[in-house]
Length: 624
Image 1 (cartoon, rainbow, N blue to C red):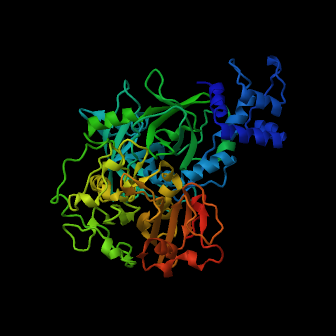
Image 2: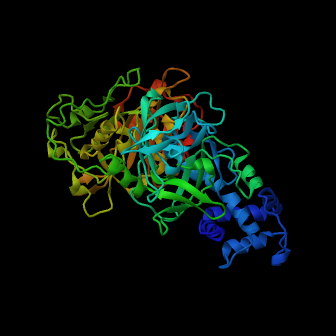
Image 3: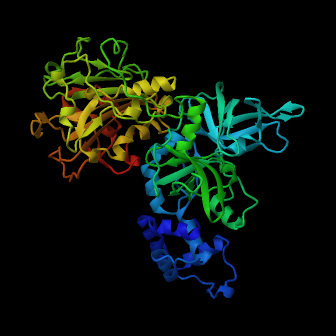
């Protein structure tokens, strides 16, 4: 793939293409300025090409790229605008320096997903090496396993017999560590010792190495959950490389490099781009993110799912980048550790009352201050479906609890504790939904509602919200526990929007949230007007209440949200579109549901003058 192919990738990206053309049209000097900054102005008389590149010429090349080699000046403009490199600060991406609104919007939409992966990426550092302080990037791929490149690991380790040892550095032995912080202006490191070299692939295989870290001798693993390996790849999908680019003395475009990176190197960066080819003749992945030498071992992340699609290992300037696909990483890791690499779990065997006896459910004291189950008003207490093992009608699972409405046969509400520091990257395997044996099936809605139609089985407690624990197995068991029909509600696919699903991620990522913990209540809004389908009234609207401890005040903060396709507040002049999200007073949710959370005094929206409803377009619209 050449630079012309990269130009075609931009041409096939309508939003980015239109923004670039708009900027060129608005400012004809932009072309010459960009060319100068990129260091690509050169004598072109020998080719019969004018030194001045006009906006019309750029537009023509974008709209109809020629088959033959084209002037590199034109291509440099598109590539410079289209493939930014962002600094990472406090495990979050710095969007302030972005030049294109297109990438700013895209990255804002997936910011919570990206934040989940950033803490798991670290810089591999050396002690006792005669010349190098650090040499590349690695990321957490299993509970205590870092994956990086073979050519990185071979600098400090070598094969000896059936295993691997650290290289000698007389009069000592090299020591390797991973620092997960190493951001610009970072106050403190977050280092962990590489205790063992588990595997270095030989020269005939992919550029992979696996290292075992000793969490007990460094930073805690909490929050640095393994990055799941993507099950499939797709040409053209939006991705990002997260790693530590270093200034490269070998570049042929040093002025361009300094401009793109702002002359700041050796710190954590995120570079968005696209997967340009799933594989070449050697089974490798190509991508067009901006990288430099220190990116060796970087994760290539799918921006939508937060899963790793590949392991970056090399690049060819003005041509392409190369990476090892996730399938190869998984295959090698499974040889080393059967069951490793976040493979799809096997379906659960039959489950009975004994299997569920140890479930403690939602913890009201999880945050410190007590956040109890909501009180049941408006006759709701009489509508609670009976539970064989609990007099209070509460079904308890790992990290969450449910009360079922006996007449609607769906959850009145679910309550879940989320520990953001202990979340782990448990991949979604084959959905294995089942009825709960502790409750009579007459009070549950099973697959008979969802068969042969377009209704989604919508999690009320998200699988990933519950997927936390001291070990990966604990987190996987908790994620599996979300696949009970009692935690399911019929939802249109449009309800599965990114803002609603990522709401908890955004709140937990806010610097004001103490200990990155939240207690969350969710459920449907039941109305007599809900239409009947297969003997079930289908709720059209859903709500959520999120309770946290504010770091600044040390007090509770509780916020309410509704995703709605109707104007449920008749006294307000809002036009509610299909499944739009709104922040509302907690008291409004109480009126709609008959639940009493006892949290109205902790709702920051109640202290703000103006409309009681806030439409949410981006997570930044949320008031905490």
